[in-house]
Length: 191
Image (cartoon, rainbow, N blue to C red; front, side, top):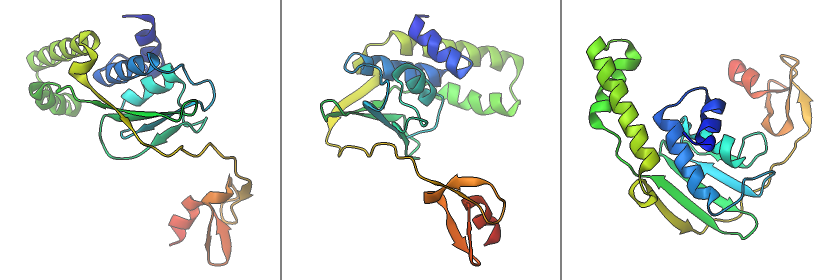
């Protein structure tokens, strides 16, 4: 395991196929762009899987800096926009993980797997991860340049105090209901 993969695993907490996917995506992007210290590189992710942790750890695209944008499409797809040159690339992780592993994964996470199936699942998972680490980029990644308008930079909004619970929240997230300015959480409770 190289240092970059170790860094992603340390950030995430364990080695898994999702971290390896994010590692391979990040490794490819690092060959074309430097790590983002601020908002130089923006990543739009189309999933909220383990792979996104590797992107955060290795590329510096994070929710906190505003250069990680989440779109809930359920795809292992990552679009990177470079503010330096105004170009964007879209990476789709196209490798087909094992169908047998998918069947076992459901039983594994439900706790309904036999000891023999667990060994088979873990061996398949290890083989798949090693293949993903070793495979050439063109075998596992579909990469193409895309036209993308420059994403907005992160903004800091004033804080307001919820007139229902008393907690502070970003002004842009406020709602008005029953004559009060409230946070989204209280708004949903008051509907």
